Image (cartoon, rainbow, N blue to C red):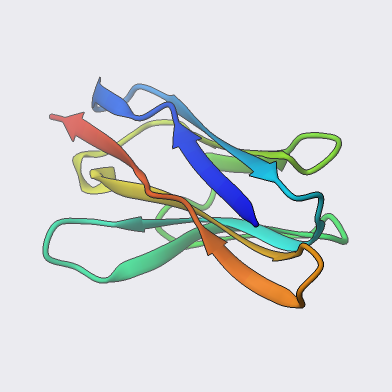
Length: 119
């Protein structure tokens, strides 16, 4: 089993930057992709950014150009930097990863970290 734990959320002012971290622990694994999702109050969960095992990245239009996803050298950490934060970035941010830890490819989710952006 693998556990994902997010950190780095909090209350920030519009225009500031934030760096979220996600740490994977437990059974050694292979990674297919790691990603950040978010869910704003009253809305569905949406993809923010992904990092694939070939090094490719994708971003949602809402954060493209002001965000960056990166991973640690052994894929046990994935980071999300968002600059020029806006009130509409307020959401719970979740780490997700498609990993193989000995029992097939499985989607793992963290429990989320709250980001609140004040205007």
